[in-house]
Image: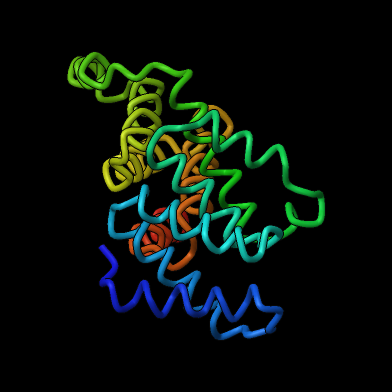
Length: 200
């Protein structure tokens, strides 16, 4: 959780912003606090902070994207979709919103797909070359917040059968990477491993 002193700084920054000031530093601090709260595993508090930013700056695409990520993390996909549906075409061009759209799309696919991870794991035990089972398991794991295991599974498919299903595993990996963001440790590691598989 964010310390009380930091929240006070955050709120003061928002007051400066809503007072008509164009303080890019105050906005950057506010967004960083909200993001770190989400990244530390507290999406409800993150949603509160992003909501406060949006109360001061309703059109800020990074705050809109952050709020979508928070609702995806709490599996409130209906609210995430509602927020997305109210964004403007101009806002949708922002990279932060592109990543949020991908995260929401993956979550919706996971909710609609085969999420019985134990049954999928049993299929893989019987046949390690059942790429569809491994792919479905990776998607289900990602939806359950197990990004590392999901990425491992897709990299295993790339290692065993790179061209399977029109490179579906590689394409899904790239979606995971986009949703998590380029600086996420899983993305940094996953991209290195993917490059090694493709260029070794």
